[in-house]
Length: 457
Image 1 (cartoon, rainbow, N blue to C red):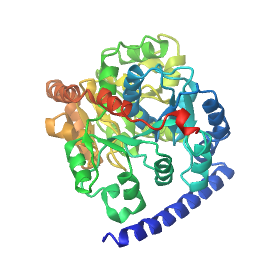
Image 2: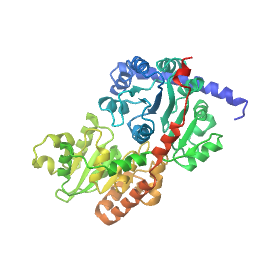
Image 3: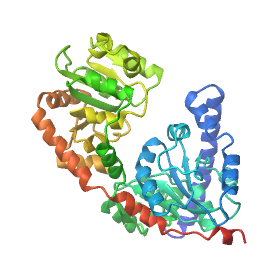
């Protein structure tokens, strides 16, 4: 694409992008109106948000400005969390604005603030990326000169209209923990306004040198700093075991059996694991943590377990049962029917299966690796640097088909020595790749926008 055509193509793609955003927003509103739960949650988290943000901004000390961190959902927050913690340690006086696009990230933190949180911090839903909405939302941050030190985006959350507004206001923008294989959409000039938005970032901090090189080939300075998820999962693995009553019930349920922990599963992984072989009293068990924990999916999963002649119990039933009830402590399968336990549950296992690899892409393989578990998954790992690295070091084995996953899981459960060796390789890779979070935080701490006092002149 020639230099003469490029501005025209950016303008055309921006118009198409805005049209798409308006249409998608309308569909979300329609879905919420007819009672679709996810759409209603999406709109509910944004209700009154701009007014609350304006009030929080007005309450800032005169010379203070927000350090704005944005995450798509809970997974990206887990990636951003060690960066935020490291930044807070470096600059404890800076108020932090944390935003989410999805309710899956916003709702857990709305209910329970993280340990790094201070009274002056603020949680909000990100604005829908259409020009007038972004304009009004940034207006709540101080008008045409928002009281922002910077915007730091976790992984891929680059919204073109948002970036264009902040560029005009002179606010630094950064992405951290990005990973792109060759040919990824943001790298292509054909993507128009998306590519232009990435090129407009002040700082691009990526996971590896390959990604940095691809952006340099596009004329964009990029630094390979690493993946802060390694810091996060290593910290979880090194922390003390929980001591709450629910956790102790799960420990009692495992009771020394050889345990497979299946995390963020979908139907292909669940169906494959039902065929592994879980004989009653056979000294082995399976903890299943579905990606979707809504009532319909849990019912579908437990119905499938019943058809496979497997005994099961849900975490909620286990927690509520009498201390020695054999009906809940003897089954071979524990179905975790709530979120928030997976990262800790891996410490009870000897083998891990991570879901998503037969769908859009594998979920978090670093969590079980940090606990020293060999990892098994489906084939969709191309977009995930850490998964490919774990394959290379022997810590992750990939099944091309669900029936292959059955065979791999059965072998891992039957061969403790081989499984333990693969688990050590996985854990060693995680440990060797820690340290990204403080490095990213240091780069962010150097980003400065005009002082709040100068903004008001």
